[in-house]
Image 1 (tube, rainbow, N blue to C red):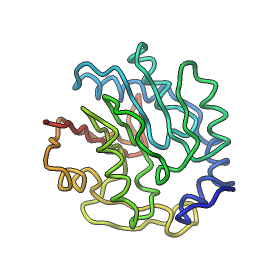
Image 2 (tube, rainbow, N blue to C red):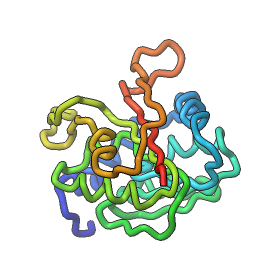
Image 3 (cartoon, rainbow, N blue to C red):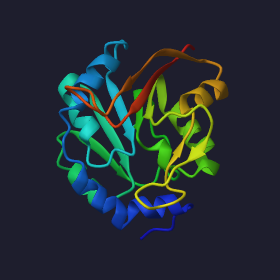
Image 4 (spheres, rainbow, N blue to C red):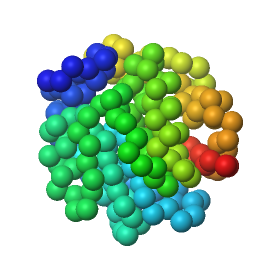
Length: 204
């Protein structure tokens, strides 16, 4: 296994990350979510997802925006094998903390990933989100008004909730909030895991 900066990276690159793949395989429930989010955007022709796992979000996005240039960054080599089966997807098998911007996309997505980043390195990931886009950032995570750590399947220091989008808005003064929403795990038709999403846009 490569050298990583944090315990959280090792956790997701290893056996736990492999087991996560087997627990999450359905992408269809993501289609209504991304249909709503992309209805608030204009002229999105390129998208990159940070922490894409096996591509459940990207498969849904491909259904919503079939002619879009898609890229994925993913730390788990097992997940990357699945990502490589998605047609016309550019895949980077590396940690977000090692990824360097190659070119800007119209839309950067991070969903269910910031909650697993070591809080000491969040600032680096916020910079990456900002520097990767020339238009939109979409953050979809567990929300909490103040930072808090949560036991995650028996593991400590592997899941953190906070106001990620608020912190990004505070850090970059040329970002504005376009829209936001919440998807309940008991939604009758298209449940998500109590995810709060935020769509941000660069104003200059």
